[in-house]
Image 1: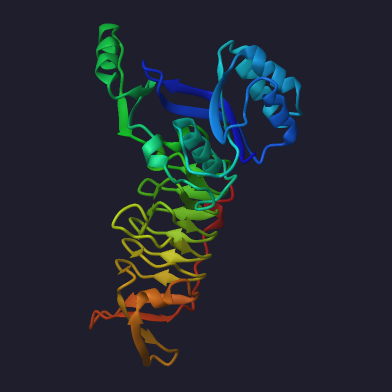
Image 2 (image 1 turned 120 degrees about the horizontal axis):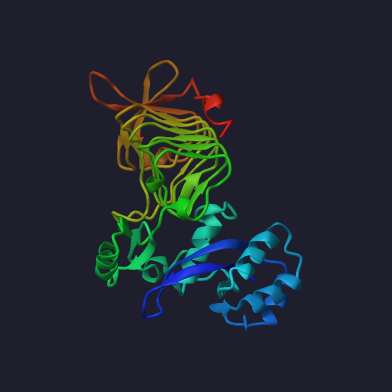
Length: 338
């Protein structure tokens, strides 16, 4: 068994799933749990969803050692409502909305890293939802919901209309700071010590190992290693738009300065100066330690290399690459007390 999630979700009036919250989730769950669940529902299908009554869930809880999950499972039982079970036998393409949310939870709980799980089919299985102050609402039902709230002297605020909710409505990873919660999607990976400032953004299937300072954009598929800093409005090229299919990574102790960006992977201890966007096709002049030009090449040939400093010559405008002699160090006081 690849993964199991137990929680509660929202459906529209036709019974279609809008979202699912999994307070209990297992990657490679123990056989004792699988066996306990099998006593109440058939989990032989490749992936599926089932509704568990409080008695069913109580029977499952009695059948395996739940550990730290026991109080949460007991709270679900005590609520007296049905609970949603989702399982995936293997890490295959996503076939349902509950399965999509299962994998997004795996990422945000840091049980898997970006690009380690199969997200094929996720967009087809995630409905576009009105995320409101009263939860998820189907777009076909939102007008009635707004009218009903007004008639009852209530205010229904529509916070966003999107396929992905914000991370903090589902969980808060330990040891992180998020200045503006709307800028971190469910499915983002935030390692301990990560700070996301107001202009930072982390997409699903993207993230930072921690500790990191994020004041720029970490696009889908991009993973930033520990100690690296994305300056204000810095950018990393993802794989969702523009037809790009190269998955980028940023190594340790790198600095992508304010308003800079990269379309190539960086090794460790690399710096891109403020305002410079290095695309794969950027023509780069390589400068040796004596300040002499060695060769001219496309930036993609430097992808993944360490100890590089990318700058733009202030007079000629030529993009140059030199040896980076000054690796950055994050301010520990900003990250160690999160």
